[in-house]
Length: 223
Ligand code: SF4
Image (cartoon, rainbow, N blue to C red):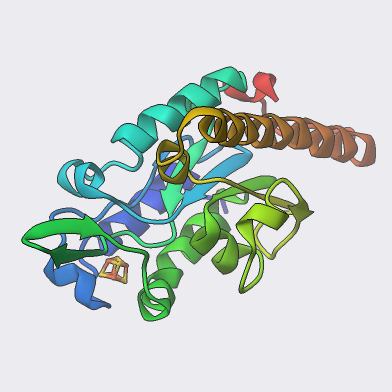
């Protein structure tokens, strides 16, 4: 029996996710932001949730935070097409304050309700390395009560990947100024470089253990 391509399987999951009403965020969203990138990538980046522009376009990390992530990826020698990017929740979480709509962190109930979609993505993609952006993502995928300032840049593993690292969220970095901004941005680039290097290291170990390397994709030569 031939296995169906991951792209096809992921597209089926995405089509179902787009109909999801498992939590109240379904009532306020414009679009379900499922995720995008290369589903055959060994590196998956998992952020917190869609913001205003992501909700409007249906694409992850397209606002200012997305531009910063793209810049950091470039500095780490990668581009979006080399990785897969998604969030722990697929619909925008927001509140209205003084007549203005503002993003808010997802609640535990929302994260739990959305977990089957993230589970399906990571189970199908089978990454070698996951980069969690920000504390809610790290608390979901690494361990509860993750302390982002103390534990970012350290290596963990989970049931989805042999290597998992947390980095500062680009939206947090954008709220910093001067030296604090430079330091935070540099830490994001360093963590992405570490993630890319870790993929190479795991691939080397896999090749040593099993001389038959799976079919090479052009983008995999990066790692
Ligand atoms: S956030 Fe997740 S669980 Fe809630 S409606 Fe959107 S897709 Fe469904």
